[in-house]
Length: 323
Image 1 (spheres, rainbow, N blue to C red):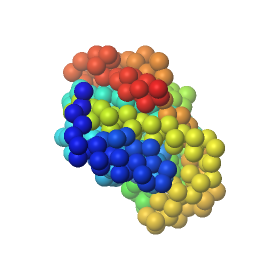
Image 2 (cartoon, one colour; image 1 turned 45 degrees about the vertical axis):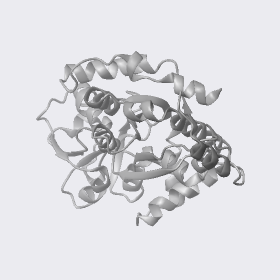
Image 3 (cartoon, one colour; image 1 turned 180 degrees about the vertical axis):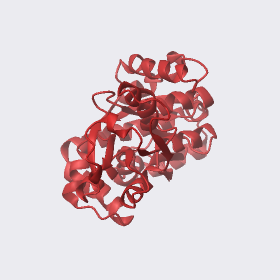
């Protein structure tokens, strides 16, 4: 049980007097929120900008990076408390730093694609043989491409040249013809296609639906369980926004990319965002789906052991937030 001091009680009570506040009667801890600036991280970005965390008494600091595997590394180093990424990055993070899943936020298999320079007229993965392929090595998308998709197309290591690169630099590299193809996510795929730079030859949804999880450091969950529960309540409110007011959500997220100088029409952006299926919760089949990914990562010697799913998954926190 968390000890509630008189000071905490008064602070929480005063906060609850704010308009529309549903803050608990004690001060919550500040969340150090990590998220990726590709479209996988944009539901989290929307949550941060929606005011819903403040409504539930949660303060935050935000840490934006190009891709989720970098957030995972920050969490392993205990520089960030919470962050989103797909299963492969989570499993590596659990192996290296004991990270735990507190919710599934979305599925993004349709957003992950292989895009090839349009002038090369490629149409299938096997056409990547002999080409320079930009890949964010160590990311979930990168691991799925190298460990599953390329071998299934008959491509071994060395059959193509893997060029290590952040996802936000890949379009420029394709335009300059320093790489021939990219393994990337939205909105960068849609930008490349809309600008006539590349052609998408496949998305990952037929291979992996790619659920994206909200993970936490075990330290933060142990120390700040009340904060985690309030945080998850804010996500439940955010889910209603994605379902009932998608135009508002799109405006908030589109403004992020416009502020970064991306030249992308709103229509193209909405098309890219529609490939993200946002439905926060804690499905009962999470462990079953992660098991396959863990077996591949173990085979490729990227983790030391299959996780103990009873330790790696914390459905109790979502259940408490839902009660």
